[in-house]
Structures are given as structure tokens and as C-alpha cells.
Image 1 (tube, rainbow, N blue to C red):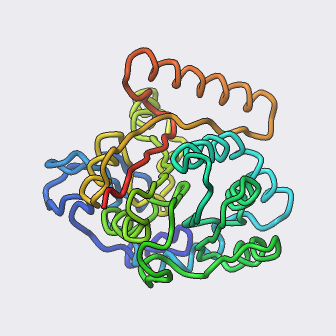
Image 2: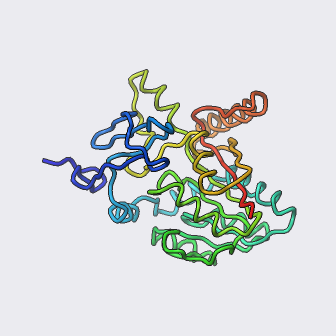
Length: 289
């Protein structure tokens, strides 16, 4: 008998080598039910293996994003600080001259709302049909699909953003490389990702498993060293990782905890010049030529 999770069974999962460096040597990092994360012995990258096929995951993603208006709007409010900080980074890079921006995995288009209001010409890319419909209803141009289908001509954008997507893709270096191809020379990539591994390891020592790795959705578990390695291998220069803001949960207590943690992480970075463990990060990179 095969256990079924999110419509998947063990038969739907296939073992893979490290999706960052290709090594076949790894050790178990974490296991939850039918899902297992491996840590590469060569580059220290943590990845899901075995994992479902891309076709199976796309099928599952039609049920991944929230669909009810209160849930959708709560998610938009939760990301306000992160979107604001990312917008500030784009504006600084553009030196006050807004250009063309693509948001990959745009969901319901909340970041497009922010950047359109700042004067940017915005487009989105998404695979969830109901989210696409919601973003289009606000007047955004959103294409259905992934970067694998080459939906835009090369060198079309001054900024390409992607929030909490890189951990979901099958080949992170290829994904980041496609983002670089879409940027004009000197263009900026803004990549937001969850820095989960340190927190999971700490909680496991306490006997707690809060499903923070979120399988099968999260195929990769990045850390500052591995995301920066992936960015450099994709051809980016001036790669930089920072806290980049914090989420704002609906509850007052949750908002206070999140904002306090985010401010502590930013102070840690400013003083020690090191990333604070266990807090989501934003990594930026430049297409030099």
C-alpha cells in the first residue's frame, strides 16, 4: 500500500543527483513521511530526493495558492514590507528612472501593484490559473507558464523579481540563468527565498517538526552560501544577500514577533556583516553584460 500525500505516492517520486552541482553523493538531512531531503557532500546544498515529476507538481499547484478573497488579501498585506524593500532596491538601481519589470511567479499580482504605482512598466508570469485571472482583473499583463517556455524575448527587462519561487523549481541554476537572459545588460535580479534549514535543525533537537521544509513544494533548501553559488553559476555578478524585510501576519502577536525578528536580523547583519540564520532572505545580482 502506498501512502498518498498531496495526491502523490512513493511511486510518483524519483531520486535525483544534487540539482546545484550534480554530485550523486549525499546524506539524509531531514525526513517527513514519504519525503526526504538530502545534503550534498560536495557543495552542501539541501534538496528533495526522491521528488515528483514537473508535470505532477504543476497539477498539484492548481490547489496551492489561496483562492478565497480574505486569504488572498491577507497574503498581500503580509508581504507589504518585503515588497516595499524590493521596490526600493529596484528604484535605487534604476536611479529614479523606472523601466520594465517582470515578476516571475507573480501569484495575484501584489508586487505588480506596488511597482506600477511607482511608475514601472510591469508584467507577470504565473502557472496558477485562478491567480492569473485575479491579476489580470487588476489590469496587469500576466502570461501563463514558466520560464522554460521562453515566454519573453531576451534582454526585455531592467529588473526581474521572483518571490519564494526559486526553492520550488527543478533546476535552480537554469532558472536563474533564464532570469539573467531576460535582463538587459546592467539589469537587476531580486530573488526572495526562505532560509529554513537552521531553524529546522534547531527544532529537531527539541523533538519538534513543524513541517517548515514544506515538501513536496520546496524542492530546494537554500542557505546564503548555496544561493550565492547558484547566482554566480547562472552568470550574475555583485551578488548580495540581506534580510530584505519581514512578513506581517494577520494576528497582532504574529506581526510583533515577525517585525521584531526582522529588525534583529537586520541589526545583526549591519554589525556583524553576516546573515542571521533562520530568517528569509533577499538575494540580488547584476547582469554585467
